[in-house]
Figure (cartoon, helix red, strand yellow):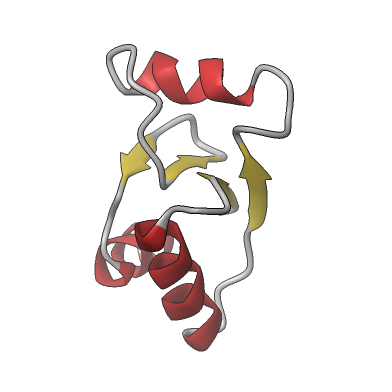
Length: 78
């Protein structure tokens, strides 16, 4: 299973999750919602209208908002 992580450059939670996922050897695509057109709207669709990051959108259509690395690994290993 693959996923896209929606982020911003200034988000501390995004930086931490990216670091933790990289340390765990998890590969993902990163999309900055302040740079990529329509990315913020995709995030808002799964977060009740909020542009909350980090938001992960998985290839099965599910999403997680500001998850721990443990929750991401659990999802990927399910």
